Amino acid sequence: MPIALFAFTAGIALRGILVHYPHRALGMGNGVTLIRAALVAVLAGAVMAPHPAGWVVFALACVAFALDGLDGWLARRSGLTSAFGARFDMEIDALLAAVLALILLSDGHVGLEILFLGFTRYAFVIASLFLDRLRRPLPDSLRRKTICVIQIAALIALLCPLTPLWLMPPLSWGAAVLLLCSFATDIRWLLGRP
Image 1: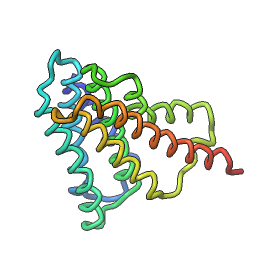
Image 2: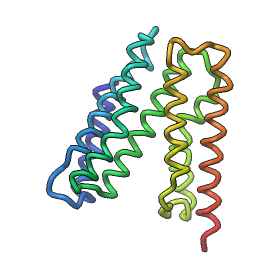
Image 3: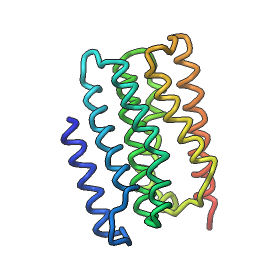
């Protein structure tokens, strides 16, 4: 599963580079995002593992999350920012959230609410296939970026072997509500545009 997921992700990224990437050099920012994609693929292997190694999964998730701040900085520093790079980064964030949510669901310490944290982005994409207005570009938003950080941080906190079981439901529900409110705000804005 990890190799297939990475090959699929890299294939989609390669197509995006060939069609939409405006620079001659790939850039270190996109290279870091590709490393994050590899880490997410490795984490995907824990979904099927009967007893994933808690600290290893937690550490890999922390590294993938930490690198998220580095790729954009590197792209800006080298003058190689692009819409493709931003989209590639966002999709790896969404994939990381989905994989972490599946790991947590298979662990059994959280309920189905965890799927909101992992799959809201994909539900939005599916809805956009039926509603043209949802395919319009959204303006840059600090709220959206902040809630994405909270979403991934909450998933990683839920993975931490030191997180007490009593804290898991309020943490997962709290982050899910924030994420759903953010998506509702964006959907309302998109649908309200003429």
